[in-house]
Length: 336
Image 1 (cartoon, rainbow, N blue to C red):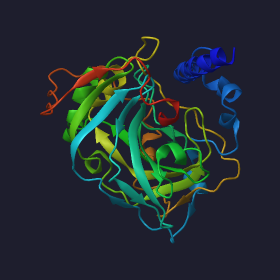
Image 2 (image 1 turned 180 degrees about the horizontal axis):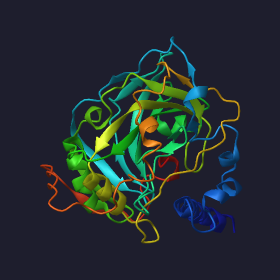
Image 3 (image 1 turned 180 degrees about the vertical axis):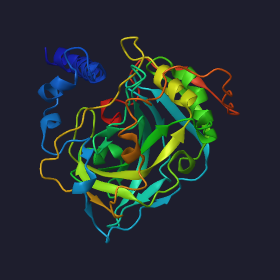
């Protein structure tokens, strides 16, 4: 009898792990039993007091001249192959551990992955998670890091000071194609379905971020998807990336989720600040940020959700491999 029970233990463990993975892939933003409104019932931290994203209300942001600029190392061109996956919620790129971010207090964070949040369900829906003075941007980029005092991301993700995210907004007007995004966007066709991965050869994250990396907003918050752990130090850049309408349209319409629906509006609504203080390392005078100019234009000049004719085709990479995994490769905790 005891030997029988011992034989059943590994099978039971596999069953439970499978159930957890399936449960993790089932959360959504707006549909089903695990939509955003019901996250706290299954992931209690999602109902916490230090949740993200938030609205960055510039008149209430505290200017801190002691905050130094972020020191980014290894963000320039990296040789090698970098997996890019459709995890059912977004597109995610695995980053090399040679990418580091040093915060103003001297804490060194190691890069783990990069992913995106966007809108697109209609021509007027923008998809950034954080808002600035109530204005939502078209796309938000997240470069996820973990504190170098911990041996791995898996250890750091549960630590109270474990994570940091460098966030950047994307805006679109009649901009020309951003060639730094051409290779990335051309590979979206290879990961249409959840679990599919493709390989990027060569990576330059620095060129995929805004030109000004010195000015930022900073506050303590959480992951923006389940399990919503409240251990994230956020650095939200004030400058933004420029993409063409065609590039934005392709990101909004290329990937399918676990229910075979186009991944769109993959952003969480803003959460209460709850007496937290948001700081910036630059004076907030309402200048130099697109949100102030977009407030009166967002209704009439939202981006068009159709690809322009005659747009230039993105260049291809020299090496590309595609493979499909049955499981959601990167798990719930890495898609925030």
